[in-house]
Length: 495
Image 1 (spheres, rainbow, N blue to C red):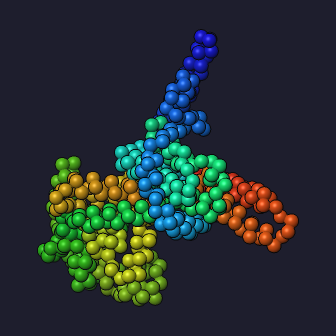
Image 2 (cartoon, rainbow, N blue to C red):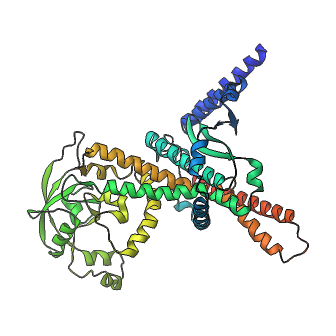
Image 3 (cartoon, rainbow, N blue to C red):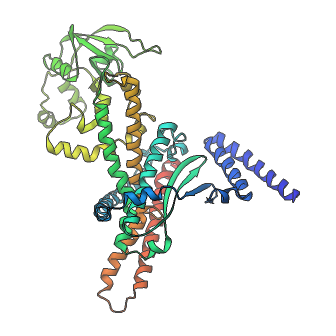
């Protein structure tokens, strides 16, 4: 017995040493996962996991179950007809989004195969979308958003399960290294298997559907908070400066604030655009500029003098067709400063609120399209801004006059953003048509529907054969799509 225990400890020590070497080369999380695996093995051997009603799955994932929440679930799911209507709407929503995800998947795969060198490879930590591990997702805000999204997701499954008269055995979390990476509502296995396919599809669709709908609700709340933010300094800034153009030659830097032009105060982008429209190429102007804030938050003021360039000639030099310039109203002699991304100082807040921002168009069509797209476009904000909801310079240019103050408003804004972000991401990710994701189950039952319909025209087709065919095709498609996903991730790393 002592010999076996000694051998086990030696093996664990070897694992830790190897993991430490790999962690130095790749990421510290590798060592953490090995230590977590050893801890779970010991807890399992000592019977502690059984006492917690927990199970170790796939070696490193802890599945913890609980019966708490059943009474709340029963109370919420009582208006069964209303929830069944919701389930039907959610099912069609998920079918549409799942088809969109599949098309995006195929296009991304084709793009990777056709132009592998043009796609920037992601590091291992960027691929693993775990709060605190991925540079895209901060630990605290990411965990809060993820936990709320998981609870909403699994309660969605549970509510539709009860609404269709089926029982939920337990709720639970999937934990990796003390970080929740998933959740589940565990229905009675026989009941869900014997349920009509339409009802079963509603149950599978309920989780991602309620995530997506919840994401829209939290987005609206976030937009209302973002609209309470205003510029800390009146003026405009540019995200980029074009080389060998007036702004660059005069020494203007990205994110510096232009507060005055020829002595006149500049309030926002419209003010500055009007100022440029009143001048021609070749005019000399003076801009009053505030530098980027230093470590103490202080900005220095200075004046810069420059001669405006010709925007028409600049575009011609880039090879732009004159007819396109005419369509955009760009004429010879139009003043050109030589900057990119010119924006008002509250642009960061407006970009979050999107169509609900105070500066957005209130026309019905742009408003509806913007509302449909904006929550999904927010997914890219942390990716583009190293885990922040907007560029760090945009954050520094904002202020709030609400009773919460700037700090309180920012806390609320970050909370609502990450809840929105996690709900939208979780909803979309679960609709990937790959088993065991919800999208994979929806695909399998949908294929069963199609096969059963065509089987009506054949007298020799047995229902079991139809079911087996649907299972085989869905399993095969899942393997193909999983292979495509692996290639999308790893081809840019190899080439």
